[in-house]
Image (cartoon, rainbow over the protein chains, first blue to last red):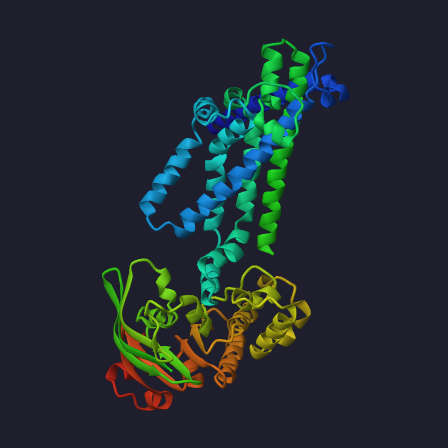
Length: 276
Length: 248
């Protein structure tokens, strides 16, 4: 009897949690979706007309994701390959792994502060999407590195031996046998990073700024620009435009759902491919 | 062809091989037998320096292949492993197509011509007696083959770089009897062109296929002679005890 009661209590707690999540999601969607209009998505904001458009913010988000991934993936995957395949000193490897673990738990505003002092001021990049992207690179490096490393460890030793036995050098072995075997880990790290970049605001407020000018890719990297998340903060806090804020929130939520779904599908398809 | 002189090997502080001396003849099958942990696999892997991959390993003595010590610093390990190929205990095809598995070695050594590769793939698969079974599905993933087929594929893959010597580390221990006998027949047909050194746990296998037999015990080579001599009148008591099944 008592056991049954305990079970019911746990069930209730879980249900309440789920209800909370569902409530937040539907609240945001209900408040946000009516505010999403074609004009909002396709124009730039104008103080003269008093109109608001989030096209620059959408583009800035895409630019910063591309720039950050272009740097963090080779860097993170490269670091993982080095640590698992080359590094001889296992003590240093475990120190680095521990540091990466810790790094991924630091509040993002600290990354923002460091990014601002180092990239924007010390390296003189000013507040720009590039400085923001570089800050995001540091933030996401541990994630990409760890997921790649984990999947490197699942590549069987016998593949490596097979390649060496045929006279392949180390780099060729890694390129042809190891990396294709861990591509799923790299992609998982990549998708997780996209999710984090979409949701990041604190670090970017410091480093990428809040401008809403419409720019091309390279022009954009050199100038200040708000991503969707930062724009949400800006419109809600500085302008009191809660309709726009909720519209952005709804867009972000749908995007996050899609990214997570994609991550799941990719993981599944790789699992299936490995099993056949 | 391969001459081993006073070879000793340590894993850290544990000595795994003690002063091995051996002359391995060309175009014949040499079997290495002995109980588990006697050092026969370690010895085999020393011959193409696959042991280099193990941290904390130390080797003294010489292994001369074509009159040249394979441990001398000017030896290109990758070229050595091309000439002394290896087949492993568990079949380990790469997770790629059958064609790409066979072409892996030649591509590694710089062959890119489509025509040449096609030719090498067919010849290697024929030599490994698996061509008829896979010729219609060369583009299919090699992991879809049965264990015995996978092992013959691995032999074909090793043959594709045209080695002189083939090291086989218990190539049939993970296979069923029918696949085992196919691999044994294959080994016998391959010795016309290649020098084969095979580690085996299976005494009957050694009797069936080998020309020379070396008996290892606790890291020492106890006896090395023609297969007939070893199995009919071994000169050492320990060899006799082992081949008559008194221990092992």
